[in-house]
Length: 287
Ligand code: GUN
Image (cartoon, rainbow, N blue to C red; front, side):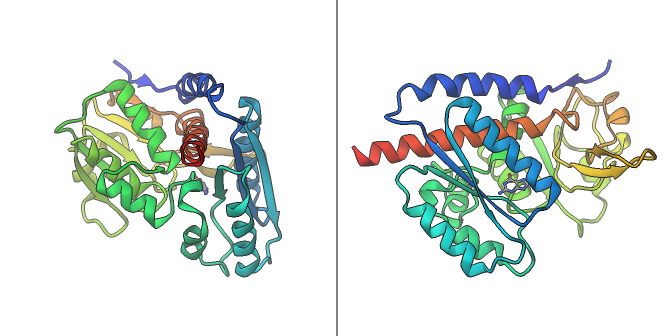
């Protein structure tokens, strides 16, 4: 038996259709601003996809561009202006930022009520407390995919590879909130393979193509691959590869996300969901 391949596009479309029905109940179209510093090619593609999806859905989507050499003060001033705008409900600062800018200071500058990336310490803290929060879009999308296969995660052993603020840590918090037993492994963890082999749910968010081999995976595990690494091809182009050796894993897992068309579309759909959630909460406060 080969694994059920989790089609991120199909799952994302279901979520997008659901969000579309909620828009009618809002006093105006929610506004999303995506801030892009510099011209990293991958970031430009991601930002374009986010704003296009927002516009397709009928949200007001806009990109705020700053040059590579923009100062941190320039960026903070731009964020302050977006925080003050009544027509903007969601603000996302695309990562990574140039090295001369402190990402944590930037995340702290976003109004937590407009923090649709869920990266402000207040939202991160609320997530860890089990309180209502804006939750980072990629782990939220991963959880939705996992629950489409296994709605009740009580007592499941979930292993998360990676401990970033944007994926690994919030992923672990979300799984813990679902009553899973969570192990977080990272670059300094010894014997990662042995730990992964115990996982009923395995999420890899490292960015190292092919890291997770078939023999790291427990039979019938759910495997979620967040990695996207550009690998050069003989023809001069590149292919995008996940963290998981897909051809090996598909023979062992019960369900697996492909790369591309796995987690990526869910990240964007969850960003739309967070933007509508933020807009609804602001509208309720202003009533
Ligand atoms: N870069 C890659 N993924 C993301 C994301 O989900 N949010 C932000 N802000 N930057 C990213």
